[in-house]
Length: 279
Image 1 (cartoon, rainbow, N blue to C red):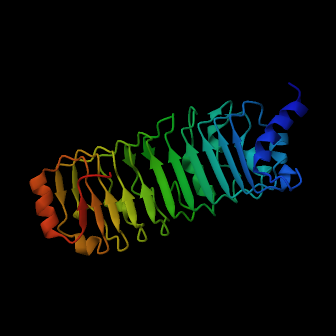
Image 2: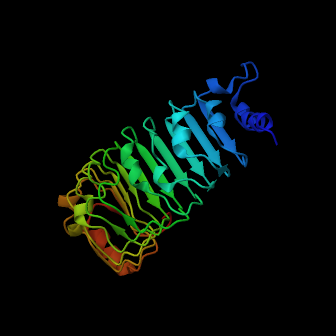
Image 3: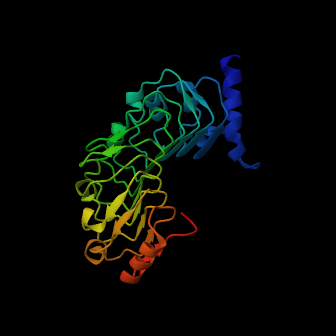
């Protein structure tokens, strides 16, 4: 297949977004979606869509360096990569050069390794979702996100076991933290201390056996904690009013806490404790 034919097939994917009464100039369109593309992805391809602010690539083979992608998409604000396979891509440059990105979704990616420390190079990043990495990421290192303006961070289903005490350093704007479906046994008070604006803490589906509000720093804006699907057998809420005065919901569906313990906890706190139904 020659290059012109390849370019035409890729362009056709984008033209699905073009209204019938609009001229077929894909480089003018702000939203681009490519599904099931298995051809080459060199810089000439992405130059076709240099005006894109939103790019989604799903079920594709990606053969280009990410830095080439970003340098040819200077206006890119949202990048959604899902179920893709990377070939000969340097894992250390996955985010290199993406200075305009505000939203990043990296889901079910088949990649041998990924160096997520480069996320800290994205000064406008507000939302980051990294889910289902095929290369297990067992640790979140210190300052890995420092330099962003994150409001939402999801790092779920990635076999995460430990979190450095300084992993969330600099994330004073973070409102939602989703660490569901990993292998965490605990999360330190020091790690959560910078998150004064945190509203939702999702720890569903981990390996946590004991949880105490005394193990949390003061989180004045925290409204919801999800501990469902953890083997929790000991839950202490004694200091809830001091640590999280705005806490409205605590989810403990499918834990090891007995019905008698749940009833006792419900009698002692104004926080809604959900132990049945939605996890």
